[in-house]
Length: 36
Image (tube, rainbow, N blue to C red):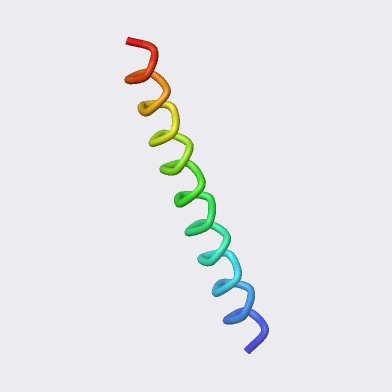
């Protein structure tokens, strides 16, 4: 049971990291568009 919770937490953390990375990518592309 504990292993299940650990795996669930890891998946949540990975999802959060993916979301943050995509958000940063979006902000970077918006900034690049603004600079051009």
